Image (cartoon, rainbow, N blue to C red; front, side, top):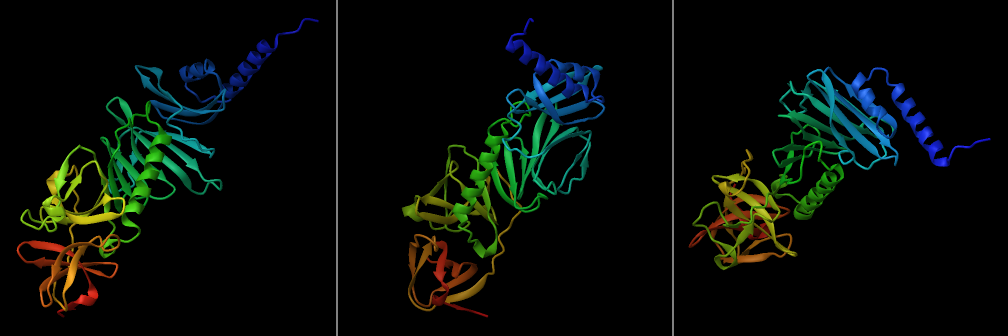
Length: 360
């Protein structure tokens, strides 16, 4: 009795599996079905189609997930994306869907733009562990948003907007993402790794303590520039570090809000010290509607003390303030008063509340 070589049997088995995997999908467009018959896949996990768009997630011979996307051009279905990188390495149930519209979760409502959506469900399938949307932009599908288990992220023209909630309402970050967001080149695991880094950097800089209980915005947009940092929102204000205080645009910066034409910021000057200060708004590639809401209360200093920066860390001395000096109370940080003091030049910094008499 003649026997088949093992390799031939394996090939026949693979063809049988692929044939079964595709044959069951009777509602595939004919050309899409023919395309998959020539692909070495084990199964199609999820797929979705509209009049001119089709997408599917399949398992290849190595049991890796692969995303396929097709569009109808002049009556023919053409595969424009075949990628493993757009799929994160997580073994959760995946659902892909295509639509001719996109439901913006912010206040922009429904947009008439084709959309490829990929969701990964929690084990109980009640909520999404991860949800990504790619929108047609010209002739490419570009990442629009990523909604992880907590918070949300929006991508626009190389910029990433990070939010506390999943409705894109409470922003906590604006950072540069130089890698590709095109569906054909997007690397999801790298993007999620960056998102984790952004969260860790935010927590590191704030240490879960916020100025006047307001949550600052994490800014990162490298441009290889240095910006003078003033202790008050004017170029005539006192400048720390012997007049040399600067922040690099290559550093991570926390923006609390704007004061006139300046941003009130916080940044690290070394591994153990932070600095609060002001930089011109036009020096950053960002515009925020957040305005600092100061209390503007009159106060006097009870006894000689120091005006400092970084009150929760290095407590760096800015200058001495004499007893009886008039100051203006602006805000608070964890028991420290943030004040403005006018001497030879205007300067802002922190004083322990116990040294202040605050007028009522």
